[in-house]
Image (cartoon, rainbow, N blue to C red; front, side):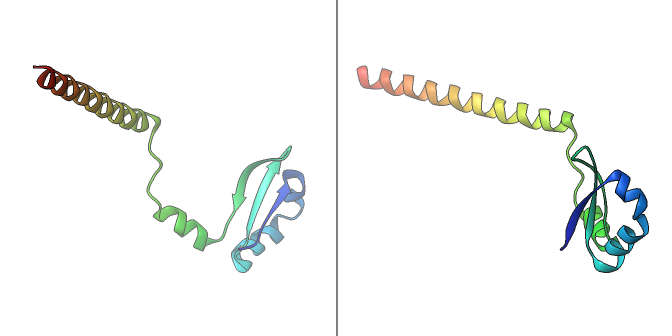
Length: 93
């Protein structure tokens, strides 16, 4: 897959060529301003593949997942600590 980056001012001048490059050549054109990529021109095949991907999780969903993992880890640490204390008490008695 060929990919190249072009500044937005040059993109205006060669838009038709970039569209043809993506549509018929299967390449990707990254359009940038001040060396920061803003968007891309991609083929319909690339777009179809992107649409098949699952949506990115929302920040709220990511936070909820993090909190759940943290809660489980804390519960596991507490359980292990209690087991150690019990084992020590059983060994001392």
